[in-house]
Every structure is written in C-alpha cells, then in structure tokens.
Length: 351
Picture 1 (cartoon, helix red, strand yellow):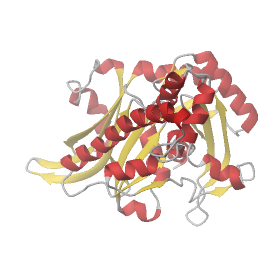
Picture 2: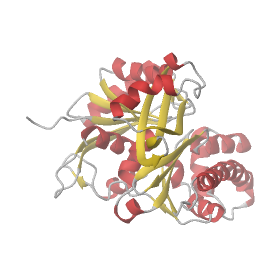
Picture 3: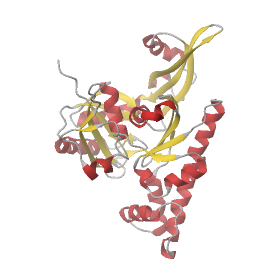
Picture 4: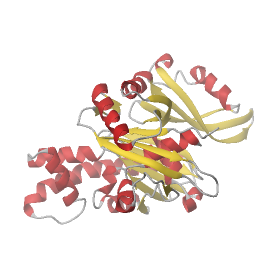
C-alpha cells in the first residue's frame, strides 16, 4: 500500500499557504513535493479566524489549481488568542486515557464551557511524585467555533480536513533540527496579526504563547502616520526597518514602525522572562525567527538586543530535498521564512 499523502494548510491573515511533503526514509530524509501560496484580501481572516469563508474558499480553489497537489486531504493549523495552551500536570496514564479525562480535569481552567471547547494534551515528560508517577505536558484548548470557522472554509473549497494541529507544534517540527535539538530555543513566528512564541527544550515544546500583534499592525501604523495606501505603507515599512537612520520625510514612518515593533518585542522578551522564572535553570539560549514580519530589516537585531540572546532566521527546509514540482534556487530560499507552519503541519500528518 502506498504512503498516504496529506497537505499541510496554513490559513494566515494575508495568504493561504500549503505544502505537500514526502516523509522519506531515515537515509533519504523528507522531500518537499509541492508548495504554493495565494494572497487573501484584508479582512477575510481576522485574528487568526476565517471571517469570510467563501473568500477564503475561493483562494483555496485557486491554490489547488495552481499547485496541483496530489490530494484534497489537509491538516489545518490553528493558533490565535482563542486557543489556550497551558502547562498541566496529571497522573501518568496512556495518552488515550488522559485525553478522555480532560473534560473532567480542566473544566475549571477554561474561559468557556468545556462542551464549547476542543481539548488535547501534549505530554512532555514524566516524574515520580509521592502519590505516584505524574505526567508534565501542555493542555491545548480551542473554542469549537474558531475551529469550525476555518473548517467551513476548507470544506467549501472541496477539501477534506483530516486533522487540526497547533501552529506552534508545526514550527517545532521543522525549525528545531541539528544542534538546536539539544538546546532551549525560542521559536518566534511573526505573522500579520499574530506572533507565535514557542519555547522548545530538548526538541520538545514546553511553553507556548500567542501574542495579538504582527507585521500588519506595523503596516497599519505607517498607513496612518503617512496617510498613504496599505500597499505603499508595506513597501516603506521594509525600506525603513527598525533602528536605521532615515531621511526627514520618512521620520514619521520610522517612528510608527519603532513604536509598534518596540511593544511587540517587549512582549516577546517578557515571555522569555516568564518562562525562565517558571523553569529554573532553563533559560532561552537562542531565538529562531520566521514569518513575514521577520523579514523587516533590523527586527532580528532589535530582538537580540532586547532579549540579550542570539537570534537567527530559521531554515525550515534545511533537512529537505526539493521535489520536481517544488520551488528551486532563489524561489526555494524566498519561501523559507513563510513556509514553516504549512510544512510542519504536513510533517505531523505523515510522521
């Protein structure tokens, strides 16, 4: 029987992105078979949740027509302010038993009624306690309507959602490899409206936070400051960057960029501080950046200075081979900052 083919689907604020992956063998490694992306109009997805299902469905149909993926089975990623990820310790049991017990274990921890949430548990480690073996892990709770809004758009496009996964877990699968697998690394994915911070230690996600700010918020600030169109503001944002000298006519734009970016980076830094305070002896050793917002000049240096930690741009495809239908050359390099969630979702499905 042939390998089951599944496509990882990242529904972002400004684009839909999808990746088809062949896991390969331990010797050959994974292959990126196909990859594609299609832009979305602003407002079609708001705060990580589909607001205009037909608009998103139309973009998905276009994406499948262009990329010619081998299947309509997809793994959908989620990750916004309506997804709760919290550290949770429970008596150690088989994972199926832990998951079935979650509605009774966590009903007092949720901001919504337990029947209105989808629950999952990601075990990290176990330890011996006075009352027996305990499991340490992450509780993931998403409101049903958040997931259903995205699922509706996918099904309207004629696609078949086979699994829903957390964007942060997808990032960890493809950004933490080689020497990073033995270190405590913060993955910071700066999307258009949401910045995902995932602290991964020893190859396992240990702490996750979604921040309600991203690159589009910077663009909006430039649009307002300069009274210009969004498309022009996007170009100026990338021209101005963070922490660079600018001409007098761009001073207003530079101040707008700096104000929004400073607030975001401070929230990221505070996340590192919180993690270190709750995990003695396990501070963040380095940061791996991804997302469209990570391409703004100077943002990496700014985060390195504020967080006092080395920062690098992620290379999610470093362990991949390019399939015959995959991007090559400069196009291969160009997709790396924005592809990790889609690729990581596909990797989770075929693992």
